[in-house]
Length: 130
Image 1 (tube, one colour):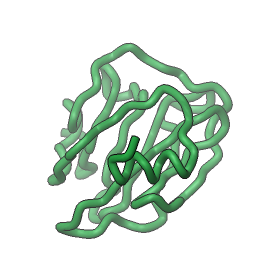
Image 2 (cartoon, helix red, strand yellow):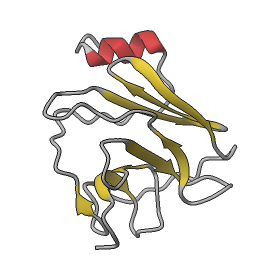
Image 3 (spheres, one colour):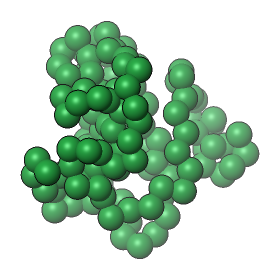
Image 4 (tube, one colour):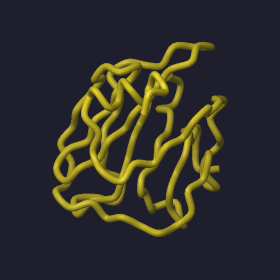
């Protein structure tokens, strides 16, 4: 294992491939969401606040050319500038990661959308209405 980062999921065939990847920042419950762009293979956004402990949370991470967003429980948590070109990959999607310790967390429903959702659509997904 590389260090004390813990992985929620990672799409990639090697450690330096993010397409995307979501991790917990060491010693916190804050999310570290990353994807590969023209700017860096590990470009992305960190959550401003951590997830609640022992409580279900809905997390939506969105990447688009130039920006990344993190929503927690239907509310914007952070928006960050990233590279203008996303580098997608056809590699496996891992729950956890072969290169990091898996997060001590449960994933109830993982959806991978090809395209941006509006805040209304994010809330509908959160409430199982979409």
